[in-house]
Structures are given as structure tokens and as C-alpha cells.
Length: 151
Image (tube, rainbow, N blue to C red; front, side, top):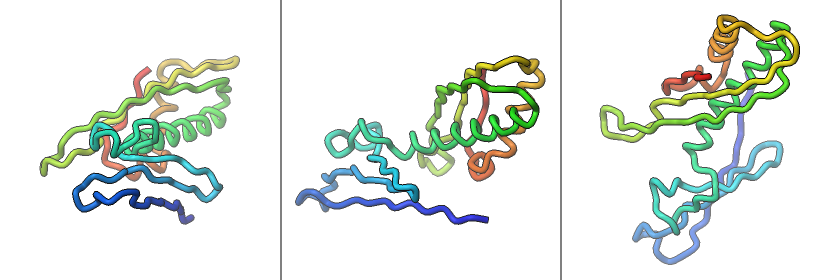
């Protein structure tokens, strides 16, 4: 198959690294050249050591789950001859502690709002399209997080 590459860059910016007082701001550079400003979540590391304006890994994880599902869904809908005009998802993730007490993203709920052109799928067909999208999503196949679709 293929290989995926991303470059993560961080540099110390003060004298208090060994005291745990250092910025968690960093960058993600993707193979196409896009650069994303990243940081730990302020829910995990307080401001000013984190930057709430930047993307945190948990947000990026949820975005990857939602985006992968959408891309799979659009492909499957196209093959089934259902024309999608727009797809809008306001996904939500839930953090919990695992059996070792380590926080993890335990659940992701996708809430897509889809606008169709022409023929619209029945409720059963829509459920099947989402099920097939979940089955074909590379990210969903790679994680143990429970992913559900709510409309």
C-alpha cells in the first residue's frame, strides 16, 4: 500500500523545561505542504503552556475520524447513484479513563447533516450507506474508539 509521512516540529522557548513550564506549541507539516499550528489541549496542560487557538491531538483525531467517514460515505453514495450536495458534520468525542486509568478517546459521535439533489435514500438506505462508510473508513478500521453516527 502506501506510506504516510508528517513532520512534527517543537523547540524549547525558555529556561524552565526541567520544571515542566514549557510551551507545548508545535507544528505539523504534511506532505502537500500544509502547516498546522498544534498544541496540547488546555484541558490537559494549562495556558500559557498550551495554546487553545491551535489544534490539539484529540481534535485532530476526531477530525480524522469524521473526515474519513465523510470521504467513504461520499464515495459509496456516488456509487449508489445518490447525489450529495453538501455534508456538514459537528462531531463530538468523549474522553474516558481506561482500565489502567489512562485517558483515551473512548467514543466519537458523528452527526452528519446531508443535503441531497434529486433521489434521496430511505432511512434504511441511509443507515446502510453509513454502515458501509464505517466499514471502508481506513481510520475507523485502525482504532478501538467506538464510532457511532447520529442524525
